[in-house]
Image (cartoon, rainbow, N blue to C red):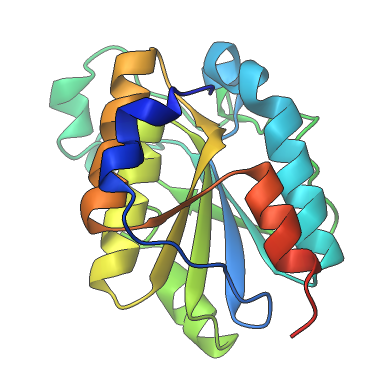
Length: 199
C-alpha cells in the first residue's frame, strides 16, 4: 500500500539492509478473503518474492483459517460472524502471489504467525536470524507477527509497499510504530539493492 514517506520518516532513524544468508520472507495471509486489500499490493509483493527467491531467501506463506469454535480465541468475540473458515474459498491463498512447490505454508488461527504454529522452531532450524514481513493486514497480522518476531530476538524488516490494509491511516500508523520500536522499514527498491549485493 502506498504510504506518505513524510508520515513516518521522522521515526525512521535506523536503517539497515537484510542479510540474504540469514533472512526469511514472511508473506502474511494473501488470501481470497482479503483480496480487496491484497490486490493493490500484488505488484510490489510479487517483486519482493522474486527478489528474495533469486537471493536464496526462504519464503513462508501464512494462511489464516478456523476449523472449530475451539480455535476462535478472542477473534470469535472481536470479529463475530466474520471469521475465515477452513475449506471455504476465502481461506485459499490467492493464485498470483509467486508461490512455488516446496514453499512452506504456515497455518494459523490468530494474528501472530508464531502462535502455536511451529514457525519459530522452523526458522531456528534454518539458522534464520532476520524476517522480512509482507502481506495483509498491515496493522493486524503483519504488525503482530513483526512485534512478536522482535520480542523473540529476530531482526525485523517491514515492507512499506508490499503490505496493505483497509485504509491509509491504519497502514501509516503501523509504519510509524514499526520504525519507532520494532523494525527496519524497506521497500522493493531498497530490498533489490540489498539482496543483489553479494556478501
